Amino acid sequence: MKRFVVLGLIMAAALSVVFPVLSAEITITQNQAIDFKRIISGPGQSCTMNAVTGSLSGGACYDTFGSKGVILINGDPSRMVELEVIPGVSSNNLTFIPRFEGGTPVQAVSLNHVGAQLVNIGGTLSTDPVSEPDTGAVTLTYTLRVNYQ
Image 1 (tube, rainbow, N blue to C red):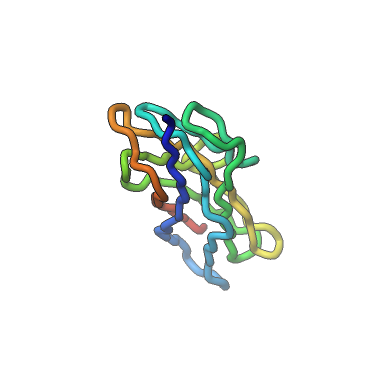
Image 2: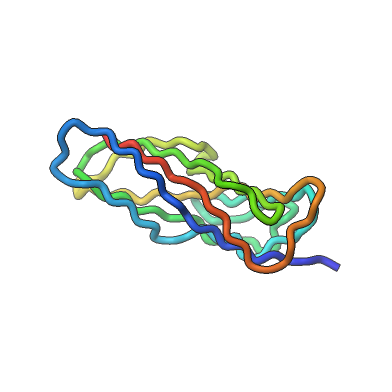
């Protein structure tokens, strides 16, 4: 019998701001949390979410699509922002490694002419190689580090 784990991930943001003089403050808003929907539990399985489309692939994926994370950054127009996603602590025999578009943990973006930019986040959810996760809802966190230049 297959067991299912319903998983929703919530972002925890750590903010590092580097600037000489700015006319506007930076704001970071989570528009959409990452949600893998349902996964198939079993030791040593993984499910990867594409940060662009939200499509899911891998042996632990039950659904075809989840909800990618969407972050809105607002600040001075045309400013460069360096972003880094950092994995949180594993929980319930699950580990989440967040990634930006292109599968990288680091991304640089330029805020547009009104000072806004949407950033998508996906990543890979893995089960412990030996132990199965318990059934039920699970919340994992990751950190978004921001360097505002």
